[in-house]
Image (cartoon, rainbow, N blue to C red; front, top):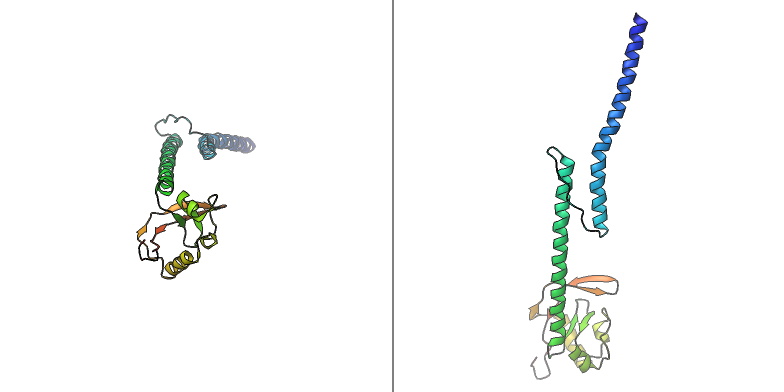
Length: 193
């Protein structure tokens, strides 16, 4: 009888362990598969694919709810990205108008005295066939000794500005630069801007 009890207990323990192992595999699959689906969706969206359809959420389904929230977040991020692209296009259009629409010569440069942009009037006045590449040292332009001297003295005095523009991004070669352009008058010999 004792041997029979030991055999039954051993068999029951073995069956319980196998059942527990199978339960763990099934439970792990039920938990990890939805998480992997959400991770795959995030990965596809980060690579540029549009977000998938929102999953239906069952009561008590935390993973489904998480997926629903992630899909909603990705949708909002896509709208935000589109809005930012429109804003960039608007700012670029205004900048282009400012640079090419005014009748004065404009040279936009950063605090390192690297040229960011030169408008058509300045190119014509300076005799430049084309706009110098972004990042060209300002003093390498054919500005003339008097104008270079005025720029140097303004820089030495800390570029006392008349107007500070909001931060703007410019690409200088492979480097993306953010700077706050400043506008300051360079007085002519008679003391007028």
